[in-house]
Image (cartoon, rainbow, N blue to C red; front, side, top):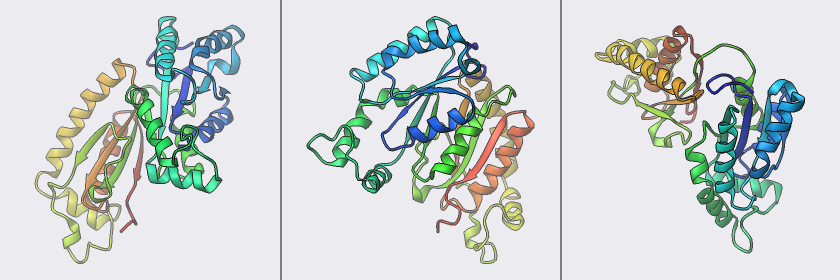
Length: 291
């Protein structure tokens, strides 16, 4: 297996029921990974050991683990400690989604939540979220699938695990509007509301931060360049620390009031600067077109 900090050789896919674990597993399979679904945490080391013995799928092995395993969090933590103690590079991917989205998905397929018992669907979701809190907190990559369809989730998995050999941190930069809420999968948050809002400029209001007039307006404001220069340096320090700690993926959320003008322009600038530092970067704009 590969050393920690390089391309992961063993991935654990877990998270909320209905958040897209099966889609993620199929995407990994299509990328040539050997994937086992619904594996009890206690068998993770046995799987890794067997994979190493027979060299399954060029050492790219993934296991999908859900909350129905007894003593889930204890088993998971113990299994990961055993794997890492034996020199196996492990990455945990946690798939997240908001309660409203999960309810809709379960209602669409007309299935009960695995933990709701005799209660309501929302009771099962709440119980699962509580049981998975520690797993989510320790995950290497948290993906919020609330606004993603299966194709978009697949593209994200391919982007993270597509197998290129470029070193360094993989960064997902996402712009958002504070009035729509923070992205739940954000590792770092940047607030652009200190810059004047193009919304109050009539000719700029219909545009967004991808349009040159808005971009130029935002980036030419006092403090904009100084902020970008300073934050680029801060991100360089953070990225180096993440890499030393074995964290391979980070989501940077950039916010303004509506997620249309300032955050979009600043996200594009940050993304470009990080690419210049040889980081692999995806830039997306969550709330553009939402108003």
